[in-house]
Length: 382
Image (tube, rainbow, N blue to C red):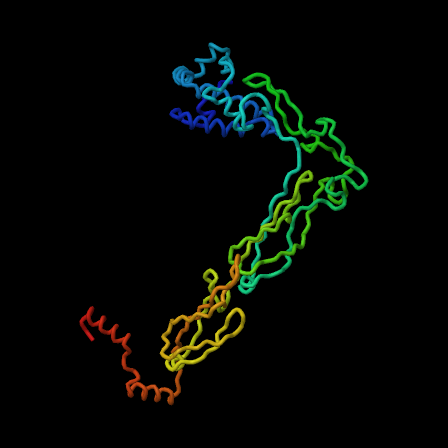
């Protein structure tokens, strides 16, 4: 079978730079490495060899020039086929790069090595929770129900039926790993991979627990108490330690992260720790002044509206806002008044307003006069 073009093997153009070659090589070497592809080792090993051979030639400037001029014939005749005749090293640091990529150091020591099975921390969990505006302001002690994986209570997470214990795997002798010798373009190499018999656990369960079917873990809906502090806002995140998924091989559980989403309020909006609301008043209250009732998060309070108040005027009520999340005190509440013009008037009310206008009550204010003057200066009419 004729060999594929080396550029085609690496998936790069003939004008590819050294960095592009190295990037393509690392990606493919990771993809086809035998330790990563245990389900189909023979096919992936052949592709792994092909990728290494292509990079060994193209990463060397002199050999790449020979290949570009003569193709595979430049090496097949001199070396009996393949790139193996050039000795160790994939050129331009390529062989050491593959070790660095997988194991963090160059050299044959530890090539293909895995980690000894040990305690592993459980995964973190996320829970989205919707709360009321007032609950975000003043805090809340509540209980939520979270689906998660826990150690089986019947077997204490061992996976073995009560009264029995897991046995040490005879193939790996409890290490969870076995050595596999492979012939590669670089010679014989010893790889360490997870034991197929115990799947890297180092132990074999002969009498599985009936509750968890030998897995040592069960899926449950766990009720968890949480405390939401006063002053949280939309998008706040709470961390509840050790309430995530169970760990592996005696490792600690993960954490639970609760994301808070605050419902909109009918009356109030929020800007930081300040609360804002809009209150309607009528023409008479705005003109003569009045004392009105205003809602707050703590209940109703009295607010004095001075005479001559204009629509959009904002009044501040101290310490009626949102409590500071990390500190003492509270924000303020801002009350914006809106003058409402009546749509339906009785004849008597209309007569009184006309009388008010005829008496000069409808004369322009100083602010209105200033506006009319600007209007006249711009358009020249009035």
